[in-house]
Length: 113
Length: 115
Image 1: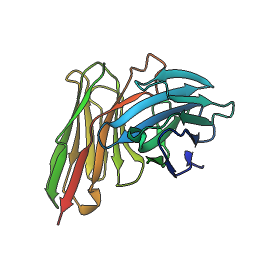
Image 2: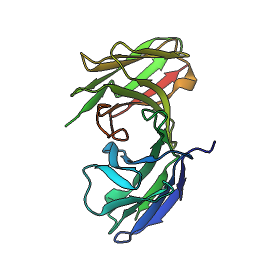
Image 3: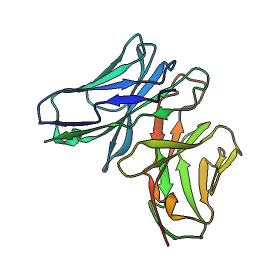
Image 4: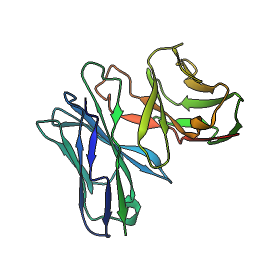
């Protein structure tokens, strides 16, 4: 069974631009979470979606937003990019059978110049 | 606010030696995770601990959970070079809620195993 797929894998943007990252969960999984990983702040929770509804949001500014579609695919958007948004963005999915196990994708590495 | 602290943050070991990584967390939780991350890669799930006293072992790694002390340990036995990586513990919100996807991570322990 295919794993969690994140696209694109690498992205270079300039300050002020906006970016959209995509995450396709494992087939049948309805829960998708997003995390930001930076050397300074470590791994931080961004949002969690379940059945197209945002269930939780981390402590990030409003420039960070997300959504989930009816097929459980999720996107996150960052507007007005700042240098500090350079990070590895990880997506994880979990299924109803065992909601405790989170499967992580390979991540999208965003560089903001 | 839930806080998760790991120590040590850096661990340099000789092959064949044993060592333990500690993970303390600040509020009640019944879900504790250990992940491994290789440079430039994503997170690989190692263990999921769901109850007080839970112990799980896989190869040279053994994880345990003491929910009363709010402490988990990851014990490394007879380290080999292939274990060199960064190890994270993460704590989930209690299962009674709906926040299964929200994990709070420790800072990570960078493990280097030398011949």
